View 1 (cartoon, rainbow, N blue to C red):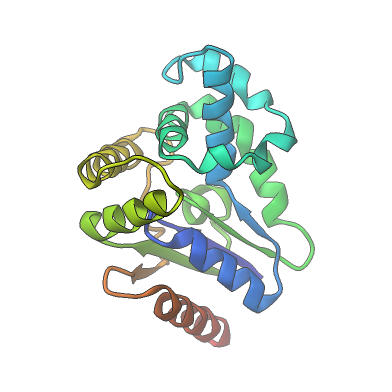
View 2: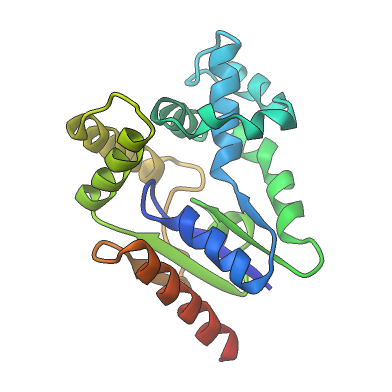
Length: 207
């Protein structure tokens, strides 16, 4: 069983995808982490994420980089959004994601183009979303709990900018697959969202 979980930043897709993987006993891949690794590596190399050559060179990042907690920072998230605009970068990371999806027994993948590009043949597709205000508040609370000096205004502006980049890029823009279940978590708490997602996937598999 392949489950594709897409959605914008801070929508809760990662939390939901992890919970689905644990519930159904499937491996999980946060594909956004791959793009964060490219963005981070690009910056470490002194490159410019808007430069195709610099971003493509950073695709050769070591696998060990995926364990670096700094990849979860807002700054690296912004870099990821920039390098993901390049079609060549997306192509370079495509095979790695596709191989994960096609492993025996299936998998859960979350990202921005899983249901539309990486695994259009997924058994279940969820598009997790929430209002910009709700997503900014969640990310603000998360960053503050980690001791990061951020403001709600800056987080809100960053999320809006990343949405615009992700939704308007020419290659694999962020959008729900035609057969995706739209899952709005604006008014859901964490446990409520997870429970509802498990129920939705279970119902979809029983059809």
